[in-house]
Image 1: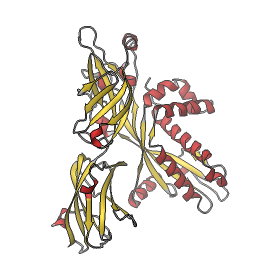
Image 2 (image 1 turned 90 degrees about the horizontal axis):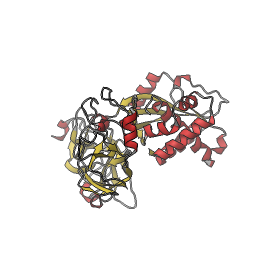
Image 3 (image 1 turned 90 degrees about the vertical axis):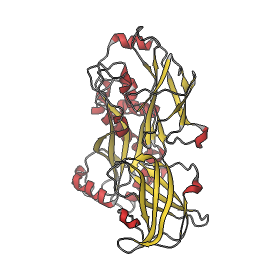
Image 4 (image 1 turned 60 degrees about the vertical axis):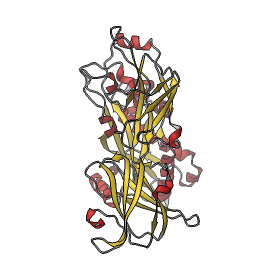
Length: 440
């Protein structure tokens, strides 16, 4: 069943995750009871004697870009346009489900020295340890939420549907930190009209919302067939265990082989043909047009003869992470840019290409085993898809450095790390190059 509880359910699951993590952390016992809320920041005030508090606020909902690539109207389109758990019940005149990302602001409040810093540090550690909410974790959390406070608004709303149905709708979601700079955080807090407190933003990706109308004939027919089951998705051995653009992946599971077996990515309308199909394993080469990040995959069984019936049998959803690969080249060193500061100009080529909405961070790690310093740089502004970024690096001591990148929290794959090692000849002042003229 598809309904509008998906957003509230994700917020409640994250709140439950924070509450359990704080209770289980013995290092926070000296603080006493830490209150976890989901209120707008302008409604929170802590007095001198108030208890420490964490607030999780949903400040934005955005459309998922990867899912958008495959969206189309259901009329005349393939059933692969719909999420697996809704596919059997969508009618031809309905719109496909809306794939969204949820953006949260997590803020720590304290009234004593270091309370805020300690709370924020432990919470960031907790969220880092749980980058993906699995289907099982979601089911356990929803059962706890619905049974703990039966008079609560969300508990009563869940009772009107079912935990199993809501769990299936949510599937598996990814949690990524959004590392805002000072200007971005300042703009956000000015919109919230609250008193600023140390905060970190998180993005929860690939949540589906849609309507539901069932047809008894189709659901009873599909339940009678053996539905394919995906258990895990791994990289092929040729890519050192990391999934990269254009590489092959291996899908493991049960009942994977059908009359006609196809692959559906990110609810796309085009079904793709795998290279090898076995009952418990499928080898599939990824298309080149995927962005780095989290993607959904499912197995679709079509029938050999269309005149028998026109149903497709679809597996459960599984997610995988596509890592970018980079190639770094040094353009110039020790030159003067527009404001006469010295530095090093790099060109970093990306595969796959990156879109303007993706957050790109560069990291330089010293190859010196004794003093392994790390320097990070934000990518310059982009208004179109890019296959390469020009970066001006300064205020970094001379030495040898490994260049790596991170796109929306996904690290670049080190297919051949020695190719991305650069040698800086001097120490410069730190800034980015936002103008191509600085390379001339």
